[in-house]
Image (cartoon, rainbow, N blue to C red):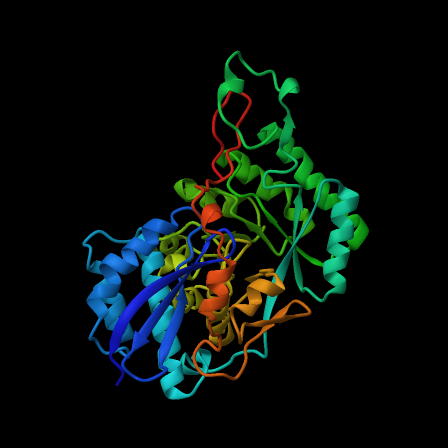
Length: 409
């Protein structure tokens, strides 16, 4: 069996937001790649891999994936944090990539074989007006996407009102904000149901639609929104509550049948397990790298299957083609797969990753190559990186209520 000789990270994308893990072995030409991308705390993830998790694996058998995951999980004593999980996830993906290459099989075949021909994805439609949103949805329908997410402008769109109309107290404008307006729960509760009434009137019920609240609402208003949206038969309502307030999903279940998708920010099993066991959510939406990689994702998928919960792994704009590929392999074999979030990459970005997943008419297709089926061109990756841009700190959007209170993103 191959022995691990080196574990390292490579930063790429123009802004440095992508962190690729490369696990090298003593077998000529045999290595694996994984995703440890973290948009906001990338340096911390790199340090966790190169100063802690990586060195302890040198000299060990690359095939012992479960042991490496379990021993890495506890090697720093404290666990279930986003940085450790991301570091574990990147290494775990790379080890599965090696395992598949040694076996001469795609990873999804090692995980149990295909349960479907391809992986359906949902698209992100948006517009600052209802008419523009409708046009964008129709474009994605024509492109073959089976499910489409609908947003009025940015996250929280429909809930922003001009600051001058908000009745702000003196000094509220001194709090930093990334939005020109202020967020108002009541405006959101009025405008989002109005958006879906418009869309159903124009599009009918044959188009599957979702919406992402992105945790902006106070918990009782999240319950109200789910109830108000019930007549419009959403495919699911995403991140209606923040992780700190998931107990309110019990009230949502008591009030309506609007399907709920949750988990984008989950890193601890105790965050998602009660929701699944009590059947309070319908789709689990963790990011594969943030929960610890393919090994952890498969365990979550199997638990969810027993409770009738489907998977909808989180992707989005800051994710990379390697994490997309890892999620796709889990999707291919999971019977209870539901949908996967779309990614869009430039041609230049995809050139870095030969063998990347093929997105065609709203579906992802793996190739027949062994492992994850995706490779990594380090020379092109290095040329793409803008080191000055990559050093700039990045922070999540900072929305505010009228009195200056920060809104959970």
